[in-house]
Image (tube, rainbow, N blue to C red; front, top):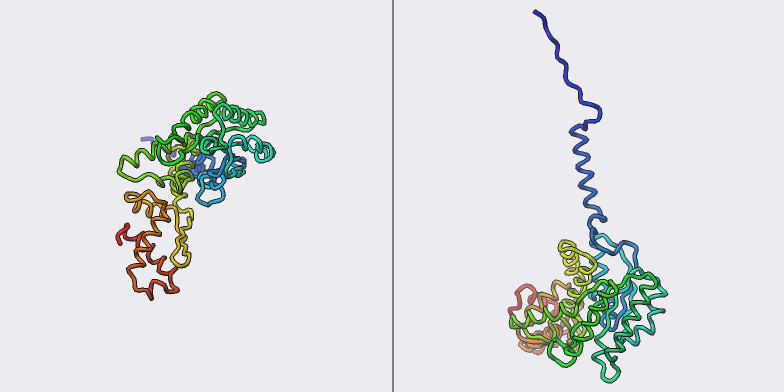
Length: 335
């Protein structure tokens, strides 16, 4: 009887072992979590410069930590893109002013991108506004001059002038925004239709029974934190951010600081976050169209008036304000 000897079959040298497969999978997972993949689809790249040309809405968008310019840069950053802002917003500017300072404030600084927000003052300023034919000429020239320098352009439509779509200013603004959309299409520019988005959001809030006036603005024109978040989201969407990337940006925005300030004998302030701003605004918007600090002023006045005078005028007024705001945030608005 013969015996046979069996030997283990050897793996060819090119076959990976279980350990090497595991290592490969770990490396692939790590690669997918790096910032280039996180930033997939976004047209802006790290190291690029973005000029923000505009009026007071853009100026405050940079000067305030909760402004839309700051939020755009933060939204890109948390998605793995480290871009630099070139703030070029000047309060009161019309398209006449912007074209006259385009060279010094934008072109000479050699941005990769230019975002231009214009139209509110062209319509709103009486006298001193800009006619529609001249507005068209100015905006076309601004876009062409930027493109001739190799600068990529995004056009923002103008936001509302008062949270009432039917007022004369907003009726006049329709033609200006219609031209901006055509200009963007004709020159293959990116378009952030913040004007249309604001109209839609205000309309939805009114349908819910909420009072317009300061839903998205502090004064009917300049954005409050909620309005700034709307503008920043529209811009990031125009840059190519998907739903997940926008959600990442919004989570970061909610932690941005915002200062609340009211007066009761002395000025008292409280550092909040945009998340807390939204909480306070939600409590007051069903009953009033006032800006949130006016609403908090009224709440706090009423609260102090229920207290004995010795407490009402105590030195610890700041501490009382802090305690009251803590209560408002914790109780959902119940007094």
